[in-house]
Length: 303
Image 1 (spheres, rainbow, N blue to C red):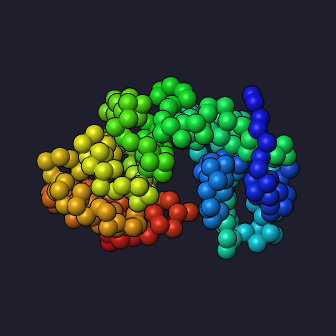
Image 2 (image 1 turned 90 degrees about the horizontal axis):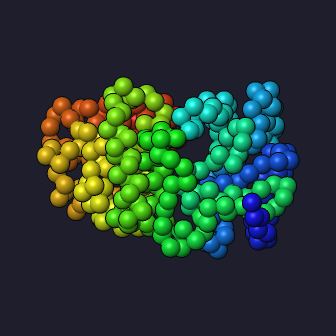
Image 3 (image 1 turned 180 degrees about the vertical axis):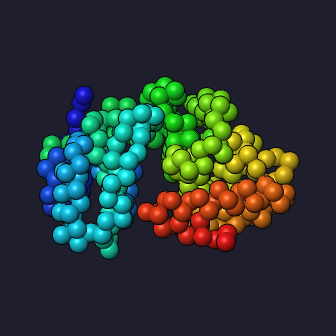
């Protein structure tokens, strides 16, 4: 495992997190480390933090500690599963400037499913680890799985794939991406979505689908590729090629700026009343993602 020195901006951020949380050992992962190393001028808002601990008392103390530092706890102790069976605990908190997405798990190195999301900063070492060449993958726009498709929930993987491709402008028609999509589609054909409606991974996939469209560099090309590759149909069987006004979606999608606008457009372009109602019912289920204000707002749109 090769470590690399952090630039000063990254060191300052890690020290800031330490001062806010009083945590002496943690990992910062997700989009922020990548953006900092790519020298992007970003406003830091969401911080993904991983802590190697699974003691419920420690987790409770962590929450109480950041409350004293001015954070409001949105979700104090949410059970979640990675690699299908490995349990982790999630804690969400926010203040006026930051949203903390904190995961407590036995091995922080398990974070990430794709090469371009596995880079992380370490504290107190003040270095970063890039075992799967995330920076190179982003520059070359090549996304790869770092483990077998069978090791993770396919809904979770598909949602992550879409968000990463849209954020880093990686084509869904790239050979690497197509290979992953082909495998995911085969895995998802075995899943009955209606039986997993309240499953967090499925709802996370729905949320990620909308987010990926909103943040995509070219919304028209991105949505057209998703339609042509049957990605929409897999996530929402009611949005099929026969009962969908594809032309209208493609023409209107460039104007979209929020998840809710995507949902309204999709709803308008589903012709069948029964399919429209099925789509709306799934959107209503986003209410369980109460920590995500935008998702919760979307869930309330169809009364």
